[in-house]
Image 1 (spheres, rainbow, N blue to C red):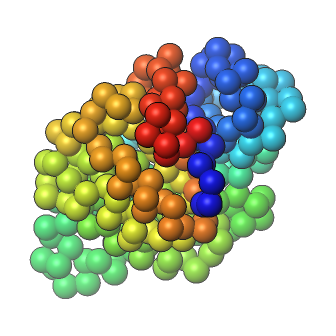
Image 2: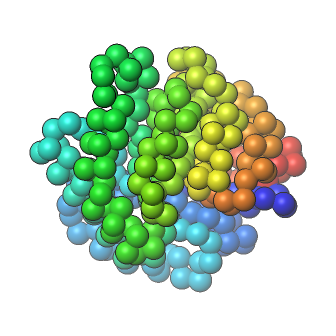
Length: 272
């Protein structure tokens, strides 16, 4: 990325109505977060999709969604659970097709417990990958068919490499890597993981999506940028070495502070 990156944001449709002018002025990337729950995906979400299309008339930025994640892992060893998760992923991709989204965020299966135990039982790392493939194989094919990419976001991941290897194992352009800066910083501060910039370096050009949130290394704060203690210059220096042009998405609790978060990055000469 040779020039200062244009920073996007994650929000719901209601919040999009508030920030629409800010989003459109630089055609910032957008991640919609209305389609994560079972009640929405099992209901008539087409009304939300129609609302999204109207609000985004004239939008030229890259559009994605946060996919479903509540209450499950993509690496369940129970085939009945895998069937439900596969259904949810399909529903999320159906939404992508309906609104023209080209990216869907899914959560990593790797936990703090698994970091210490993957090598405790023979063949366990391979079984995790197998279970993820059994869960996601139809979704990956669907994503390929509609021109979308499923990006795997770190949650509790301590090992910054294992999720990248999981994405690579699909050998598909429809599976790539996401990083959440606050999740990485939590893992660094609380569970001995490396700092955030190491996650960026490990992902390399497999990285296609970043959740930007600030934190204190203790919890998943989703604070506005500048309110925590993430070392943003090191993160953006690592990003500057990439050619994959990942979507840089501010994902914070207080959506009124989205513009201020980008202004903070601009004050550091890191983004616009």
